[in-house]
Image 1 (cartoon, rainbow over the protein chains, first blue to last red):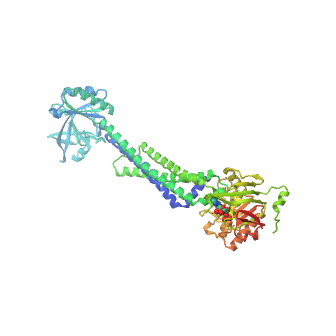
Image 2: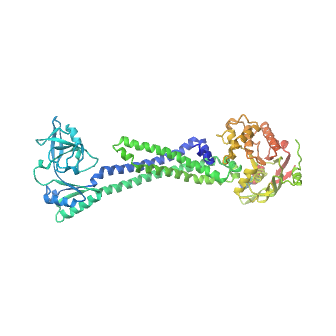
Image 3: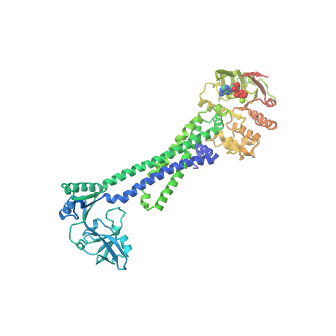
Length: 379
Length: 237
Ligand SMILES: Nc1ncnc2c1ncn2[C@@H]1O[C@H](COP(=O)(O)OP(=O)(O)O)[C@@H](O)[C@H]1O
Ligand SMILES: [Mg+2]
């Protein structure tokens, strides 16, 4: 600042702003609010979008194929499963699952109800929090983390499910995904533990949302060509729509913020007009003693811009505080709050605040600088 | 102190141009369809070191004349010469530059900035220049008008006379050749007015020409020469 205030226009602008601190603070406050509005609404909208993507991202990559109960099918045939596996080939992994509900109890006596899945290849769908998810699942139980704490079991403990006892070989992570398969409250057993019949569903873990869509389309084409034998749940297109909606919401929020900044600009315009009118005599004197129009103009524009810079800095600081508060009070992760894309909104809000202030200062400054000194000095 | 009333003529005879000259100056205003003749055929030469008083009733054209002399206003007809150079057609930028170089102003309302100290107020005309020597000069000028012990006072801490003396110091910061004062004692009581006029007298000793326009007859006691404006006509008394 010391270097900057050596510039006469900046020095004079700072002096002038200090003369009516309350008014300067109030004018800058408008910009604070505007910048805060743009930055926080922008960041909140963006965080919402990021968080939704984070939460929903997984389901976008999954295709769940289950028998069409309306058509009387209650399991998938081996041919269906083979067909689905063939279609998924190269675009993801198809995991056929048995599923049923059952009571689960630990050795301590605590019990709970859980979805029991049967698969020999759980690694594509499940990740372990402790222990290890086997590539080929032949014995023992994989227990979801929430269920594990409910029935009080660890890796190495025993669980009792439907009259049989299993050793827990891994605790499954809950995962962020909203997914039809909820690993946190599930138990995964080898297929051999289920009465041989058809699979209850096939989950295709696709490599991308696009692959998921293609796989889903192809499954519908092949398996449902004559009659609807299977129902195919594929959420990536819904995800696209959610994304699109959130993007619109974000733009709407930004628009709201922009309106508040424009209102702040009007406030600065007003304050600058008021203070130049008040200082008319003084500006006339400066012109009389040989200060050039350009210097008067520059000083006044700098004054308005400084209001924007000060308001913008405070607004950005408050916005950062608001984002951290959001992290503090909501389950949203710090990684999402600190995502670099959020900084864009800070920069945009700050720049917009400064530009609006500068623009609001131009007309009052131009008017004051072009006042005939004689007019300005007349009472 | 005595000074010849024909100083202008003497200087011209010696081949030195007077710093300020009005020649056949008319200034009319159009107001609501009628023409107001604020100045009519005004001729005035002001010499270096001369203190000229212009008296006249309110509305007689005194401010118009002073503003014309100070290049704040342009005449409708006639010539304004500054150091022998014709300046009545100069554009705004040039007139601004000439004011900065040649002219100092003192007004009835002092136009001091309330938040600035006496020294800072005196420095005001120079803030847009990078002039390192301006500050010692400002302090020196304040000392010369008897305010050496008020350098860091703000206008609210000064009396009317002191404020006008700060304004005089400010008018001299650019080392002008001419100091123009419009009703400089208008807001002051008689005693304070005398002190301020005394300052003008001392300014003239430094070879600066002073023109003071006022309806205050007190000025005539201090001026080397008094002229009277009556309805836009200049009359020598
Ligand atoms: N901008 C203006 N427009 C119209 N009339 C003006 C203007 N300025 C001055 N006048 C008129 O010119 C005359 C002289 O005014 P002025 O120079 O201010 O007189 P003084 O300073 O002696 O009181 C007055 O009649 C005044 O009304
Ligand atoms: Mg007047």
